[in-house]
Length: 147
Image (cartoon, rainbow, N blue to C red; front, top):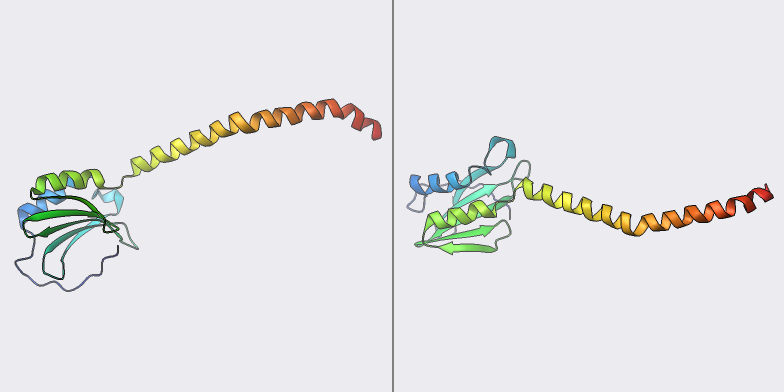
């Protein structure tokens, strides 16, 4: 989901300072300077408040969205899928912290993939290479006779 910046008007649909500080505090690790992420607020078509966690430049794709519709807070991922919904913002912020994609999980996935590839090579390819090496050793004397 991409976010288009529109001119905002000051309305009752804005976030309160307490709500913003709760969400930003929960996403503090995701908003660290090295990540390149930023946040922005906006409104739905019906003037309900929304908070966007944006990815790094140049795309700044929406990674997470928190909306306040009526008395409920709704947490969605960057594709618009519902992750959590509750009337308590603290619970929604806790789920938002857990839902933020992190690079540590990416590193874990890369390491697991590397181990799987090494295991396949060790179990499948090494025996084939060893057999071909033995075959070459047995056929080398016969091949040298032709030379």
